[in-house]
Length: 228
Image (tube, rainbow, N blue to C red; front, side, top):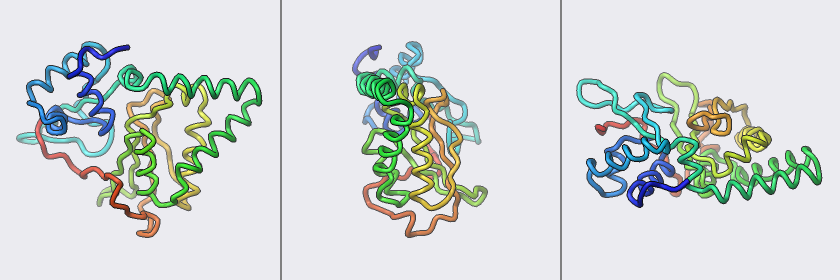
């Protein structure tokens, strides 16, 4: 699947990097006009590469004048696939080979080792940092007054097809999060199961040391005040 033009592809790749966003947010990132961004989004919507939401798939819903919610946009599975199909195909082919030659236990062992590597830093923000370097477009919504949990969101999965066929990838990743943070975490949704985003709830009782704040990790703002 190819993108319907270079401008549309640039818009799609912003959504790949930042997750669900309004037309204004995308235009600010690209340095283009909102009107041009809306045209690209309309083209992507028509092609089935992007979908619109009255409420964001995660976190606070942005509002515009007089409390009306802004429309946000995110990539569909087809849109994510168009961004990096070749990498996902290679991962799926490799896991199928491991499964045929060595069995499902070997697939799980591979998944566990891979997840352990991504969480080796131990701190929550270190994990987010690594996930971003690996192409998962991860963000962290810190617990608010009405929430007891931090919310780790992965807006993209470069191996989503592989994870759909081999759920061990997601299962071992969740176990690795728990092990690295020393507490139980809850995976609410995954892209591999057809959800619009991977969401993991992490209890608020994460110490400052466990957060392991680094200057390289991007944490999204808690609210989006811009208009669509």
